[in-house]
Amino acid sequence: MSIKLIFVINCGSSSLKFSVINPLTKERLLFGISEYFNNKNSYIKWIINHNEQKIEFNSITNHQIILNYLVKKILMKYPNIYNKIIGIGHRIVHGGENFTDSVIINSKSIEGIKQASIFAPLHNPVQLIGIKEISKIIPHLKNKQVAVFDTSFHQTLSETAYLYALPIHFYEKYKIRRYGAHGTSHKYVSKTAAKILNISLNEFNCISCHLGNGSSITAIYNGKSIDTSMGLTPLEGLVMGTRCGNIDPAIIFYMKNELNIKINKIYKILTEKSGVLGLTHLTSDFRYLENYYSKNKKIKRAIKIFIHNLSKYIASYTILLKEKINAIIFTGGIGENSILIREKTIKKLKIFGIFLDKELNNYMKLGKSGFINKKNSSIPILVIPTNEELIIAQDTFRIINI
Ligand code: AMP
Image (cartoon, rainbow, N blue to C red; front, top):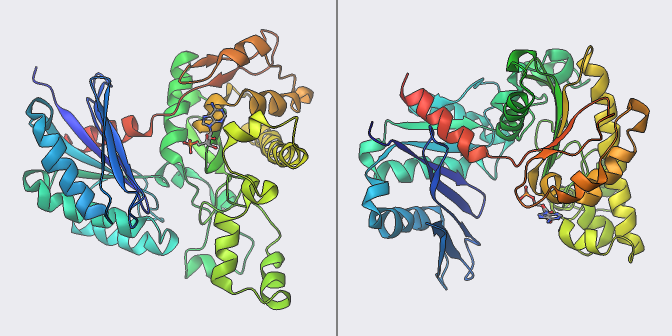
């Protein structure tokens, strides 16, 4: 059987991650990242056959320049990979209510992505640029592109979970509601956990904690998302690296009316200057925070606030899962690696009979996957490295083969 590969493109606001994956064997043949567009530190690095290569541009770049470079100067140099690509999968941050699953990219789906841009103004427009540009660079795959949405996994939320208690016309007319995010990650880790525990996915209940620069938590019942902490945008919910998560909305009016801070600046404060960065005035990097936890009071306080919030969410989601919780899952850069955050969070859940095995917890980092609970824990606790790219590759393969 000839090998078929999928090219996965993830356009961020000023970065681009990419990979070429075999969706059947799950092998990642080439992957990399380009960062710092719009300034002179821009670079691209990629790994192939365990060798890392890096090019620094020393000039301003953008998504178009990088995609052209990536295909013409990198991918095409490896014809044994390039010639086997049969489809392109794009990560799209927001699908609004238009998309409950991944879709083939055509004029109708592009229109839907455009409509949802209002809820993800930093992401959807650049992801549309990615689609348009790659269609020009690899024209023979123009009609073999698939959009995979961060939001579609959460389209199973009931209106009880997705409606805000605002005047209802804000939903009916303007579609203001909870959409959630990180859906691809929650979907991947819940599928993987169900497999590990040998439970059929449509009977699998879990609480999935994706803790990274952005963090969200999802309650999954019978394999489907039933509640999630991110809202209309990824600002709501848990305390994050630089995002505030839940706050009293009246704080915004106080900042504007009493402190005379302009509304755009307030948005910047809430999204880029808050979270553990804002609380410490030091960093949003949990590696650093963890190292200085017992030495620096501000860091200790910030981590305690992070854990206070996270454990409250886990506790509240347990009641949504009714009969049985099959697993609590930790993923994302922090969830996969932070021994301290996992230990302190699980300690708070003693009331549920959930217990951590310290030795297993200490071992579980840097890409390792497995259980971290004691044998007598009422609920298994798993660490599962997320793999959003694989879901994008598999969805792309599934959809272009329909
Ligand atoms: P992500 O957005 O999923 O890439 O996660 C990024 C976050 O994971 C950052 O806050 C990192 O500091 C954190 N992280 C990565 N590696 C570690 C580690 N070994 N220990 C603690 N936190 C980590």
